[in-house]
Figure (cartoon, rainbow, N blue to C red):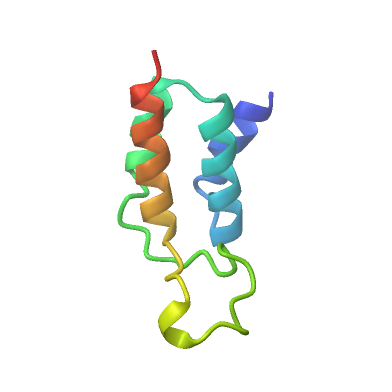
Length: 83
């Protein structure tokens, strides 16, 4: 199953793989998956390119790239809020 594979990605050494796992769980997961995502809350890996290419923007207009931990916390909160 896709969800089972996404859960395995959360343990990957690759920040990209962890990010993909988080996003898939956000779409297919259940409230029970929120605890798995909470375990990543302190992950400081930056989601490089999250906002797309910002090179043509002045530095003060560029959005800060979120971390894997922040995205995991956001998705965990969304899972908990589901009916």
